[in-house]
Length: 137
Image (cartoon, rainbow, N blue to C red; front, side, top):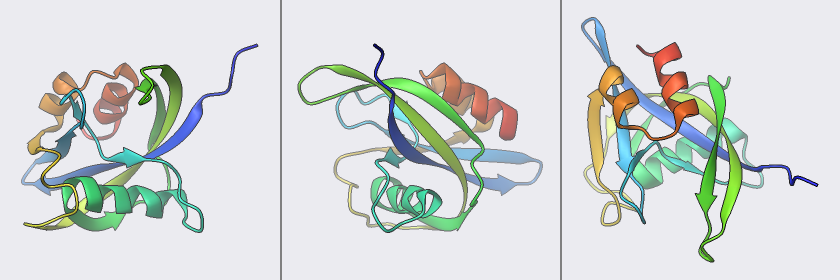
């Protein structure tokens, strides 16, 4: 019997400029691939609020988070044991208003502002690429 995927929440940090939209990507801790800030749901917090907190901790940004999800995708999360676990990520938009120079995970991650098109190219997860292309490109 197949196990249900684990659940995570994510923020898709973006900023508008002129006619375009930029997306803020962060590097993952282990593989250094480009991802968006994400984490586990938090007790006592709405999922969209937890996603905004992940963006603060992982990317050092704050802003206006959408309370409505812009999509979901599934990826294989690598656990500390090395096991791959299917994980469904619910994504919430976050329009960035404040970019901090100092944030909790600044020594563990890189952050990278790129066009929405470029973000879709750099992301490995097909489902996340599709969300970026459908909502921001």
